[in-house]
Image 1 (tube, rainbow, N blue to C red):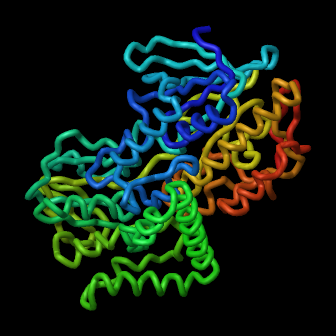
Image 2 (spheres, rainbow, N blue to C red):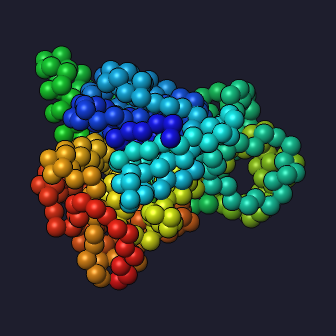
Image 3 (cartoon, rainbow, N blue to C red):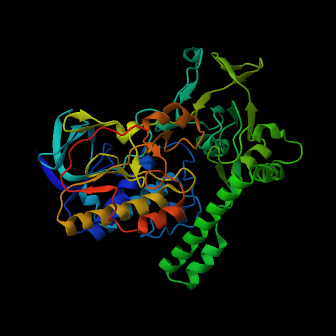
Amino acid sequence: MDDDYDVLIVGAGVSGIGMACQLATKCPDKRMAILERRTSMGGTWDLFRYPGVRSDSDMLTYGFRFRPWMGASVFADGPSIKRYLTETAREYRVDEKIQFSLRILRSEWLSAEKHWVVTAAEEDTGNERHFTCSFLVVATGYYNFDRGYLPTFPGKERFKGLFIHPQHWPERVDYRGKRVVVIGSGATAVTIVPSLAREAAHVIMLQRSPSYVFPFPGKDPLGVVLRRVLSTRWAYALLRRRNVLIQRSMYRFSRRFPRLARSLLLASARRRLGPGFDMSHFSPSYMPWDERLCVAPDGDLYEALRENRASVITDRIETFTERGIALKSGRELEADIVVAATGLDLQVLGGMELRVDGEVKKAGDRMTYKGVLVQDIPNFAILLGYTNAAWTLRVDVAADYVCRLLKEMDRRRVRVVTPRAPSGELQNEGILDALKAGYVRRGGALMPRQGRDVPWRVLHHYEKDRVMFRRSVDDPALEWGAAAPRPVLQA
């Protein structure tokens, strides 16, 4: 074997860097490496390069709990987030642990040896490399980095202009003075339209159905004041806690009083757009948080629409033409550039094959324990964030749990820990199924299943997760010691 480690982390994005930093601090004796497919760290923030790319969570909650975010903006752009991750990795010296340009092909647990064998291919040569580790952590997120979701558009090959998917934005695209159509109404479209509208001749957001767009202040005056009178860490902790409470309260209010929340969101949009705007373009058929809310910092999308630098059309595509897009209504949209902001494709474990003693194991056939360990898979963790709050909130507490688990293994002097579920626990429901987004409907079956109750059920509830993770690591659901493969228990 080329390399042997105590802990191997797959992915050098937000989750992987967060896990590595906590491991370096709390388990400094563990030999660690991070395997990353790309040539640079950052994950999502290294991949996405489209104009205006930014977080849709405030940075006080998206930043790591252990390293304050010092930027002035509530929502940071992609390059700023990538820089924050790079600086964090350097500060905790985990940048030295990253091995780049390695695509993970498969990972196999060998019970006799009590370790994982991870097979990776070098991106430039295709040569295989092999790593062994006692504990494997997958921090690759849940979408496919190779391609975004692209529906079949009739006649697309006839279009003479430039066609782009935001996930693969070319390095140099001159859209100044150009007519642009952005297909989509989700977070990417809501981000990219106002950014393009600053220089394009005109931008049309072409949507099949509307989304809720919530205007949120781009600056935080209280944050400025607290940073002047308190230490950085105290100010960050207080502001972060405040934002968590605000987010959670808004979410709970929306779920408990969906019609009132809908009315408030639509009223906010109406104030921003003016009395003459056709509100059908921002009146979804679903209730708030059936899908994730889109955020418009300082209402930038509404501003672009109000100033006629952009417009929105709700219609369906009949076919592409040489000059643009023909709609079902009979209207034709002429365009120099078409941007297909049509969403993501789900992918679990970064596309790797997972085996236990030669038998392939699929994540979509089993549950997660506390949303971190995976049923009947020894010495294995997966880091996934929230769908209804900042991703990093959950990664922080999950990474802390993995460190505590490793310490408990050392204390017990055992080499293996495996979560075992009781009979009848498995449900025919995925961990993302509560979210009705298109990418979940298309690929939700790939994700781990839900159980009847905690700890086999993912709640997407930060406060309840914090209580759950604070409990003792010792749990009857965990089998300590030698692990033999068992079949998945069916409901």
